[in-house]
Amino acid sequence: MIELVAPLISTYHGILQHYELCKGKLHVVQQEIIQFRCSHLCCALNNFNLLFSIDQKLNFEGVHEFASNIYTILGFHSKSSDSFKLWQITNRRSSDYAVKGLICLKGLTNLTDDQRTLIKELEDWVLVEDQKWIYRMDASFAAKYFNR
Image (cartoon, rainbow, N blue to C red; front, side):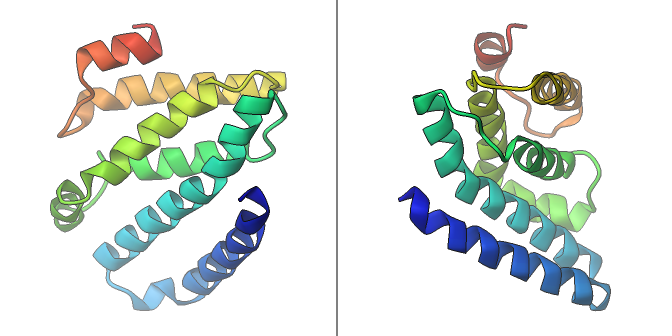
């Protein structure tokens, strides 16, 4: 399965480049939805490699990109337009997935110091930002997965 993901990731990057060229012609809400969906798609595609890396205790090359996409997805909780927030309420599972992606990142064992720091900073940011979200994490869930 992992071998099938690489061409899809390449296609994703092509779509992202095309979007960057034409995003100025799109409405702000359309831009937010596309950014949200692109980040979610990238996380979903990279999740195969992430879980394989966790299972095999291997280095995961995509830590920075994965973390960046989690920042993008969850950042929309507090800094997006009202129209996008309405759309997001109907697509809440995608936001939940980003938090679960962070939990998976925390499961990596073969990390550089830089990657470990990045994941810790992302975790700290999520816990602060959660206070601003319309739909906050359940306290027992946060305590279980984020040692808080």
